[in-house]
Length: 244
Image 1 (cartoon, rainbow, N blue to C red):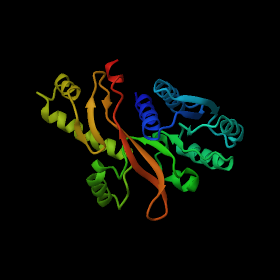
Image 2 (cartoon, rainbow, N blue to C red):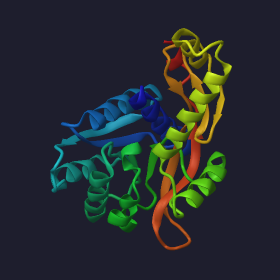
Image 3 (cartoon, one colour):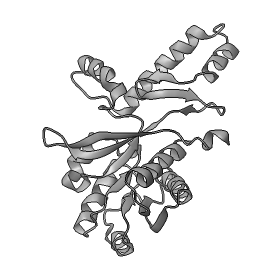
């Protein structure tokens, strides 16, 4: 479910916002997260008439991506999906730029670390990744302020916001349930629709999965000259997926 929702958001953003149709992929073939996001992006992007011009693999722990990047450069993509964690994303961005690959890169929530910008620097500027929330999205403003006041001016990551929303959603369901018995609490949770979370409106679908919009952020230089994520769009869940 997580792979599908993030992949859909990335594919839709690339097609509708960036107006790009040719994607390359470089993924970790030994990592379930990377492979799952790659597989679901391929399905979603091709369904939207996008084309995967080349699909390359590496194995976690690899340090040299020159062979794969040379092949990718020859395929002339418009965007490059690297569905791994921030360490690989940063290393690949640096090497890709040295190979003359200037197109934006894409990632999933595995890129969500302040270390991404610190490691990759200018090489990652202009690239995008999907996430559960962004500190500068409108709904997060009050939460970010309260979090910073409590935790020494720290900026909450996406998981902090999700944890806060999960606790509040459960508390709301406990208040609304007919009783605190298991069946009544279960039914209250199953009936959640458009719960106003700080990370976005949350609905529990028919498969009891939490459905909400994904956020797309772009790596950019902030006022301090640091490379950091900047909120650019929210992408609603795939309506067709909820009908399956």
